[in-house]
Image 1 (cartoon, rainbow, N blue to C red):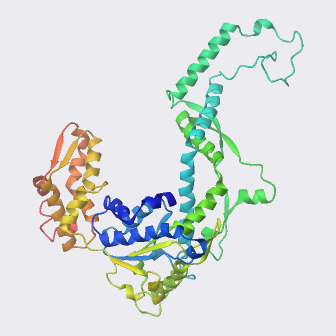
Image 2 (cartoon, rainbow, N blue to C red; image 1 turned 120 degrees about the vertical axis):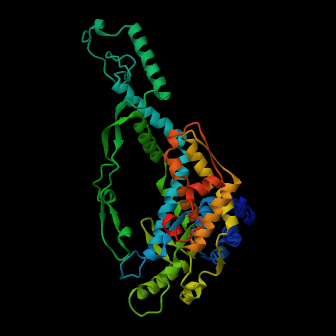
Length: 477
């Protein structure tokens, strides 16, 4: 992450977040500074760096305004391990639900997968060549064109014994012309394989048996931490005979993919991957805790309130830093960045237990989206909804375009729907657009070569009075 983070100044981070998220500049600036501080900490000496802790962030705002998207895009920019969890699925130990420490185990699993994916790209070329060679041997065996071995021993390995004189009939041996024709056929077969001219042909290949039986035991740390790999137990007891293999009938295309994965695994050093993953999880990991306002107690001394406050206490220990046992060993959470988010419609951040409040020193409020924001969301981001629909219709050979008037009308209807009913933020645009283009999308395959213009008139025609009649909005939008 160090080389990448060096290029990501707070201004650059904010600019890149602007490519996908409209508005919310305060939140973007806060997360940009937090990410840059991680790079700054890595430039310090080990003794001082150990005492520099991340400033966790609490984001407050209604649903659909970009809280989750900001966290996810931030992790993608930094290539940092990231996990999103819902605070409501956790419960105090002794109640129904997962224990809070499982979020750290999930983060470590994500880190291992992230590092493994990066390492796979580094060995992709060598793995592809090795897989192609294995596939070539399987194809030539199936075609009866395996390497020719002279039964008299000529050209064979030096340790092969030559047969006794007169044991082989010279007339039964292939002529030089036949050997040359066989070699030409082999070369043509290999050329066809490289050009992928018969990917649907079936071939028998020997692949690794990926079924790994596990023995799950419920322990004090939860079921997910106590999974026991029976193969590891066999190795421990000296009874393992190595990885098992089996012969499968697959198409050449399927076999190539499976063999590529097997060869890539052989080139990877899993111990090094795990070591790097743990380091990145501990120092660069980002945990996004959503719906944190849902674990605020209402002040009752019994019922679910007891568990809610218990979750806060358990969450406190993880956020302030502790050692969590994972399948890869103990992992510390001291320098993980925690981003918490909640709508806080019925509660206030001050209603969280004081100790947990102190662990989220940076607080930013995200604002509700305006009609102008909806216009920008429809057109400006790289993954704008209007661009998505244009690309989807293009697959059917239909040219779909949005006029400024049509975009403005869609934004106005979405904004009014949010004001009249529940405010669900930018997600309202998905409902509006899907309703507007539903019939056109259903018949798109029959309109190949046509042009469809989404203007104010079409929006009014498709949505009717749904954007103006408050009684119709709950049912139609």
